[in-house]
Length: 184
Image (cartoon, rainbow, N blue to C red; front, side, top):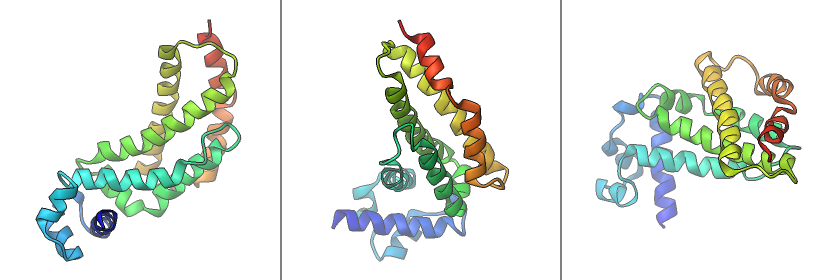
């Protein structure tokens, strides 16, 4: 029952975000849409941002599970961009609100997981200290996240496939090279 309630609240928020800025949406509007009360909302989430975070987390888990190795990272990233494009109204509403951090955290977590998976695969026998590995992962993750936000702000005109093709040409072999330089 708890998952059904959370999904119902998330769906109500999603629908509201299609037509209204996030900072103008109230908890009352969300619970009224679901036929629930405020107490039920607060039982599950501390505030609208908590619900938004849960909503993105659920989508992220479904989206990126299968894309954490070098052979399919491009497809994983394309799916992430397609998700953003498909949910443009909600993602743009989030980007232009106080919840922008939630969107960036959503993208960051998925991209970071993907980069770490690639690094584990290409790093093979390399011995890289954890802080060096984390630095490389953070560098590429922040670069890719910034690229996604820039793409969103510019209207998502470029197709996800074209963007990933350019990205792949740009970073091909660079993660492995960076790890080799950090290896002992």
